[in-house]
Image 1 (spheres, rainbow, N blue to C red):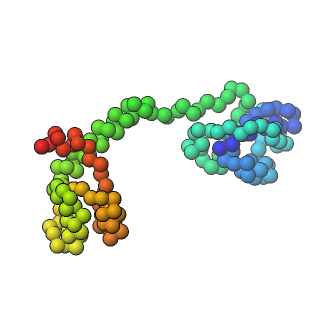
Image 2 (image 1 turned 180 degrees about the horizontal axis):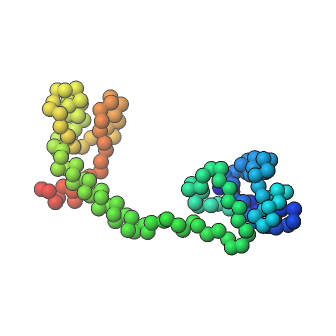
Length: 162
Ligand SMILES: [Zn+2]
């Protein structure tokens, strides 16, 4: 998102927000830019340093906001969740999920890769299993089209159940 300082022929200064410099040029060429004060179409760009707009991802790419130079738009802090609360909720949710995984799967230990392969090929009963596998073993399983998910199960997930 680019914020450009613009000025009309009557020297009203205002800001225009654009997805890019090219987008500004396109809208300028199509006469889509007008001065918010007097409606003048003769708009030109003042030399200015572009600013980073932290909310850019929420703006639609072609949206244009023309604003008066004062007051300054302040929107970067909107909708930012408090990080601590978020992390705690995330951890609780993750622990719950991990316990669910432990509850619904059979621990096959270091035989995981072999057992996953056997289940995939119908040589062992279809069921959820968990166990230890090396990165190489896990990658090999994935490449063979065997659905596995590397989950770093927290110790707490097992302790509370056993
Ligand atoms: Zn004007």
